[in-house]
Image 1 (tube, rainbow, N blue to C red):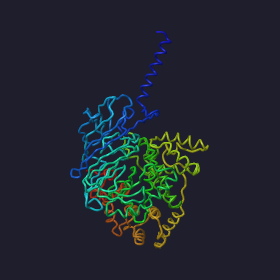
Image 2: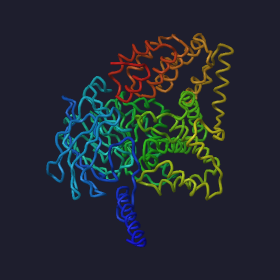
Image 3: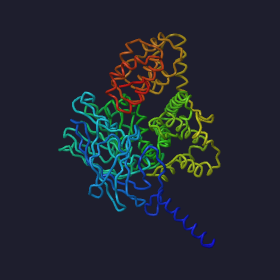
Length: 624
């Protein structure tokens, strides 16, 4: 063979290898080529075969505490593959079909965080797969509540929580945030109850307990959500409304009566709301988060119901997720800050539009204080304060700290200050529109930022320092608040004179109260806290955020007045919001009172969702 032919053979071989490699790493949709990045928290191989639509058909059995039925997927085979891999954890897989015929399947080795790879045999022409399955008592996403654990105490309740990688514990699925699907669902529940999902929802109970759902827009699996309970619906506007247990529905409607105003403010900032309906369901107290941005139906904690609309910034936050997170989604959990940092910034802008700059600045300063505390807490692991994380081999829940939320917010707030608000708003609106219904990595965002903001306006910015370095860069925007300065003076005056003029706080917002309590000096004494408590009755506060920060100070500074120990125990047994309870149990641990915390936890633990349990177990060193 002469050298010319040899070169030709080599060139052809290289070309064929290149084509094969390309075939394995892309998905073709018309003329558009989509690539999936390596995902350390999913067994799925979407560059080989990817799910595109789910038809879910399930029964919800409260007597046995089991969800059972079928998950049928439309699939796209990108590479003439002979198998598709789903994620499953703590599920019983009864059988699997490919295009209606039984097919072989296997479950891989069990991983504590990731569960198992469910490998299903297919042909290159297979269009649908159906998994027959049921949940078990180890299903982490689902919490089954007895009537006593609900507000009305008459009927049981169920809700799911999929973020980050728990959807695989109630549905076998390709559980990666970069995979987006549409879905339909048929859900059968006891006829006394109503089922709602992150989809088009009923407004009234069905006669026979059967409900049908449709989600026409593509969403990532972690936003699949189901709630079942004795609930009712009330509209706030023609496109917003609330679900709640019957005894709460009027109070919830009043508390969230400004949802439409939030919607208008959000659309004025960054474009049309594309999910048609924005409803909120207030769940029983064990719900582990302030809110969860499930499309069309935000899940919310009852701790938001303060009676004065003072904690509704959480609703603004979940609404903002309709753009940042649901519309443009982090491709992997290492990029989580792209969901939450953008959302905190957007939430802050909504609050400014509705309630003024002073309110927004107070919220921003509290976020900065949270950030500084989180950075301090990670002094021995500074890599955890990067925006872009490396969570391979770790549960992605470990990356869901204030860093993603508050450092991400400060990054964008600083960018806004450098670029100017007008330029930054144009950039952000275009970012949401350009990347709508897609996922994005940190690297892709940085490229988009450089091309569409920094280079466009000839701006210099320390992007890499913010994203890939620990701590908070020195050029972080300095948020100021005149009202918080007055709060500081009030603290100094009280501690100096040992007297309290209660009228000084008669018009304080929740943010001012939180700032007041959290900024007590480290050497404050129980006697000084008694003076403050007697004046403001903080131990008996019905505002959950005020109560939480006051109880934290009581634990930290050994304050025992006004039966505060009893109130702390009642709070921890009643409330399941992870941020609140983990803050208090952490305070017990830091104050050398772990045994005191454990005594309460043993009474309260059964009321918590598994997400909260896992956090507090680690904090207190709890062993079953």
